[in-house]
Amino acid sequence: MQIREEEDWIVIDGVKVEGHITDECCSSCGHHLVYHETDDLYFCAFCNRWTEDVR
Ligand SMILES: [Zn+2]
Image (cartoon, rainbow, N blue to C red; front, side):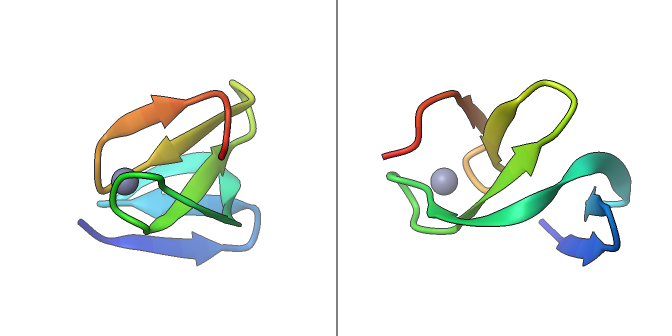
């Protein structure tokens, strides 16, 4: 799993999505969550899991 931030984009394993890396951490693995701008959702790339509420 490779994530990098590129201006207004996040590149996850070579796939570009519109969003940014947040300061919020995944409740399962502790990695930073990615905010997906288009769908207004948070995503943990490591758990491969979408989440709407961030705890
Ligand atoms: Zn996670």
